Amino acid sequence: MDLALALLYAHHTIESERLLTKLMQICRRVHGYDHSVTEHTLTALEYVKTRLINIGMGTDLYQALRYENGGQKIVMKGLIIDDKKRDEEKLLNTNSKDAVPLTWTPVVVHSLRCDIHFNGKIGDIRAYSEDNRICEIHFEEEGLEPAVVELENVRILFDSPEKE
Picture 1 (tube, helix red, strand yellow):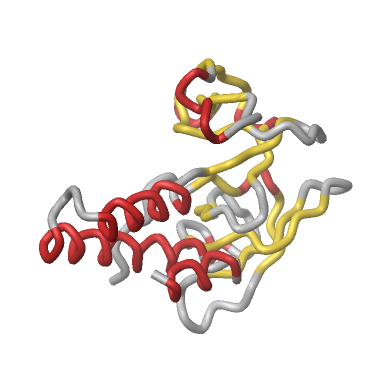
Picture 2 (cartoon, helix red, strand yellow):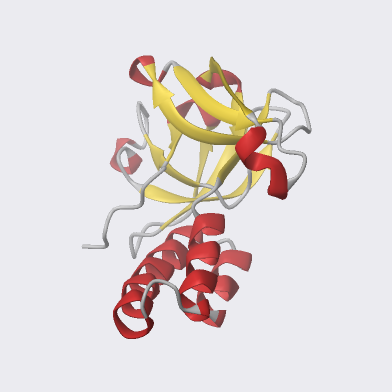
């Protein structure tokens, strides 16, 4: 558990999510569903899988849930004010081009015309520039150097695939 959280705080969200997913399976098998260790691991996994966004240049946080209309719209829950009241929050949607994923959010790169070898690659956002809407992506694939990508060329990765 400590390693998974250390990975998360180091902005290695994909690795953290995968480790917690494996740990969750082990906890359920060894301790059962109602054990405190299993419940603690589930809470950590749910936290890691939460995808937070801002809208435009705002500072209000929303929880991104999924894309709709071929990726043109993003469904979100918000406004995130209090973690304990998340179930009461309304579902909203907005144009996905207005959604700004937070640093550490797992993303997949798409539709690049130059550097097309990055298309389809997944990684974590490690930095973001509001001025020109670009983000720095650190890829999970070994040998791929970090890349600066326009925000319109990334999509939030809601479910991390198993590592090959």
